[in-house]
Every structure is written in structure tokens, then in C-alpha cells.
View 1 (cartoon, rainbow, N blue to C red):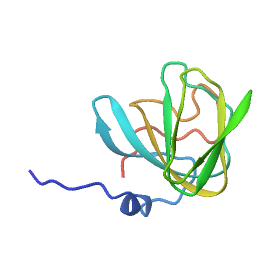
View 2: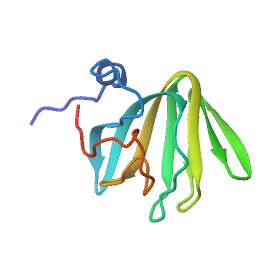
View 3: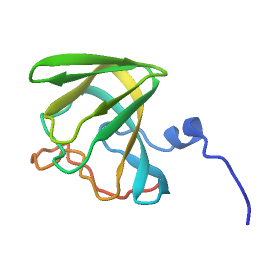
Length: 121
């Protein structure tokens, strides 16, 4: 069996679309996903799971109904389950998401930004 590290830069170079997370690994029932984001996403929540945003490059914000958080390169933020939120980035930002397998990026919110699940790169 060969051992090989997963290189974020190499994986990010394989796609250009925004708001469409790509799976790069799994641990137990959790998936590690990379996404490129810019502009506004949609208001949504995930009633059954927390969601982790880890900023690899750039900066992003997450609006909440009662406030906002800024997440810069090298930082992470955990959105608690069931909390309505709207991520956005003024400039392209590269993010890693960690969430259970099968989580839909827009939650139950119907949107043209809903991405297919379990797309591996």
C-alpha cells in the first residue's frame, strides 16, 4: 500500500467553480471538502450537524441573524447545528469544510447554488 499526502494546492487546481465543494478525503463518516467561494451564498442551516469552515487562502465572512464572523487565512469557525447562516466572500477564498457524509451545501434551502454531493477530486 502506498502512502501519499493530500496536497490542497494540487486539489484546488483541479476545479474552478464556486460554491461547489469537492471531497478530498473521508474519516469515519466525515468528509473533508475543498471549495472556492466568492460573493454571497444563501441563508440556510443544517439541523442535524455542526459545520466547520477552515480558510486556507483569503478571507470569508458568515452572517448570522444576530451578527457576523470574519474568518481569515489560517483560521477556522464552527457553525453550531441548526443555526441559520449565510457565508460570503468579497474576493475568491479557498475553504476546507468538514462535515458528515451526505450533507447538502444549502441544507433544505432550494437554490441554484445547491451542489451535487460526493463529488471527489
